[in-house]
Image: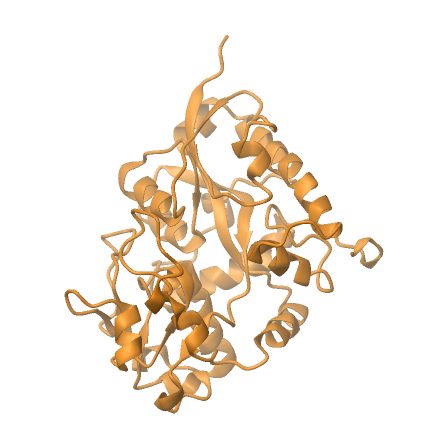
Length: 36
Length: 302
């Protein structure tokens, strides 16, 4: 999951800026962490 | 004990083909593959009706739905990735030479929350100084999450008008290409004719950003961001009862993409998607949008 953080963090930031989501979610609230 | 038979909707990509044709099984479940074209229609059906047990979904739609209590959760299986500096066209007569020039203009996007729009707006805001509140975003479809409250500068196209037609007439001055904007008409409930005459807008108008492939490559090298564009969600109840399911799904997707990666390396496949992934070879070890590899040593690049 760590290697995906940059992309996920950026999209969450953009969604917040554009008022699409009310707050920044904890990663474990939205993704199940599992290695490839 | 028999496996549960679950409805699964995922897009048809080179790296998902083996799952969809059954040559790579998902251990522990029997897959009832449901074809949805365009796959965007499955996102809507999942958000609104919870129709599928396992479903591809656009990440923005997923985050919005999850924030509102959606009973499904994502796995870090990213079945679609693409850059988003491109795919944004302007009318040559609109005087738009940089993203900042979009302020005061009308811009077409299928729906405000489409992931493409969120990525590109975010890039324009954070990299190019756009004040998105000064742009009128014109939509001609519904939001997947119908309860989403939209900013006041989002307006719906007049009844009976499409973004395609509005771009042609100059009623909007810029827009997204493809499924995110002027490259289709109507909602994602049937096969879209992406080659319809007005859909040719993609090739009729210039991209806003010049040398966009180079811009995207530079951005990737600087930020490390390879935008996620599609992920896999599973109903919470299944995860709760079958804790091995995420591992099983991850294994299937990773196995399914291996022959596709080999095809790309050998130059096989000439669909636009194949060509796009192959063009990323100088940038990354694994361009195939399943899970991101934790390491990509330069020696393994191809």
